[in-house]
Image 1 (tube, rainbow, N blue to C red):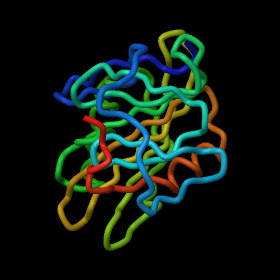
Image 2 (tube, rainbow, N blue to C red):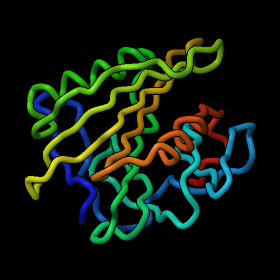
Image 3 (cartoon, helix red, strand yellow):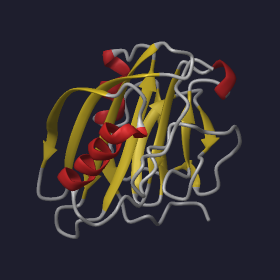
Length: 191
């Protein structure tokens, strides 16, 4: 597999880049809810999280309760890109979610972690997103790119998290995912 494998942070939150192949319970396609779905993408979700992934991506099972699964561009042994999600990343908001990830990554949760910068691509009354672009060293010794997003409902603080990783992250892939992140009511989540 060319997409990264995971480690856990020394703190209590796993970074969650290691996944096993399988259909993830609680992850599935969602019905329309106003999210922007780019051409060539399909809307999927987990809990309150709604996001679009490229058509043909397959569900993958996560390695922990915090990171229950996500989607990859192929079965994991052949995957070049991996998006994992945490549908319940706390209630502290997007900035705290991002800070939690960065702190865990910096103390050894992500081998060779280097932050390439922070941004807040969305700040509205109903959605805030905090982003961290980073690079890290995979188990094969190669450098990989990653983007971590924490998305929150600023009214409740309910926070979800997403990590996109791969050897290179094309701008259209990043933009398609980032532009489609939404927090729904969770009603479409298959049980």
